[in-house]
Length: 244
Image 1 (cartoon, helix red, strand yellow):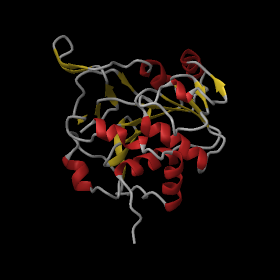
Image 2: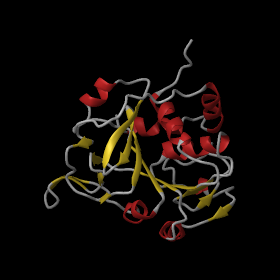
Image 3: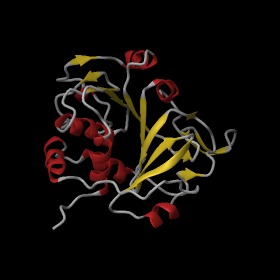
Image 4: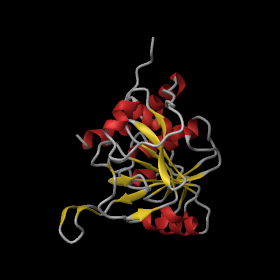
């Protein structure tokens, strides 16, 4: 009998498995999936991982009272130390930030990321928040992991409407699959067990590149048990609710 799990569980576990013991990892605002994934990794394969976040908490003790924004004072209260955002940028520029979790709204096969506008820049249909810290972190962090809780042809496009940032990507995790950036292009790395090659292709606006068809391992019972413990209010699912 298959253990029950959700797409948010699959994405959280996939993100957590990408982290190694001893790495220093940062997430920003509206980042519930990475926030929970970091804690999952610390309880699984990476107990010595260092968790940094926007409000400046280093290794927050618990997510059970984490704020809705994933950037509240809760992540500082009970943390091991205080490390403000400007120091995170400096850390990354010195080559000492191992992983940064960042978002975006549009992506293309060449690894360009748009978080600025939809449509023409001077007369946009939608004006987005912009790159913020991405302009510093994407070029300088050792590994950039992007995630997006929507996967459709408006998100994964032939060419982004505006290049907010580019290059130095590693993985993009979506509700359907994982992409890996290599040789200057996005390649299909694995398909989630709840999806299929046909579904990924139908919802991607560029031609899929892949060497072989692989599937993302489903969450294990231990991973699901740990998720219930560290994220009892299922903050990892909030981003899906916001995108309805």
